Length: 92
Length: 270
Image (cartoon, rainbow over the protein chains, first blue to last red):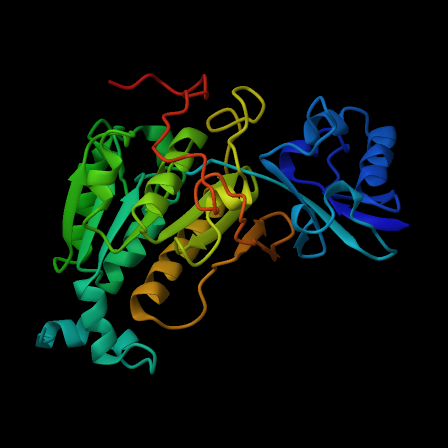
């Protein structure tokens, strides 16, 4: 499955400053592994040591948070848009 | 409350709106809004809320105005450099609108003082600049059932969500825990385009106005994500999490937490 992945500003250093990239996978887990293959270092920013998505980062398939779908087993289909959205704290 | 002649003139452009009217203006003048942080988000939010005639505005900030603030903190001016931000903000607000009663808190919110500070307000605007404060403000608002407009900015990105405790998802439903120290650049080290702060701060002011007027649809249950580079606004769904550590069915957090400050570049404050 080819999907478009929206990369948040803090991670764009790892994607050669691209704000969105193409990636493949039939579910979120495979998608993250595919991203890691093309952009080494991305996975450890998104997932903790146990491979779970970090608690201050959410992954959305289209507008839905995968935590309320099937987490990293959430399946993907061609044309889906995946967003990685981290908590941001700036305000001053 | 009876509107005075000068008030009818001052607010005429919004009083003629069908969703506002004289009644709406009276609601705005009776409203009490607390703004946490007189910085990049708090500045535009405070200016628009003051101009709209919010009757009472509380402002919390422990910093003094610095020259490097003026790139985005548009409530302050050169002659205020070195003065407490809350005083600078109060004077600017009253220069625009003497109807506004400004209450200033020249301090940082902590687990000790925040519940007492927020209790007299109708809604809180979070314009702080670090994760510990953001989680503290969320938790305090949930525990006190106080509506909250959350806004965050980072480089060219902005986020906003409105939280009505008990009804809509809170910030911990969205992001259960703050990142550990060092993993996410938090403030000065990241940089910010001033206009991004303006966009998000004004969205927060707009949320407050809709909340007070009881009109339109609030940003509850959804996160607004703004990207300045492609001028895109997206909304993603934010579900109220039954497992949320503070507003879920079996909350594990029952009292306020002071997380360790982890923006190393931030100056220590007295």
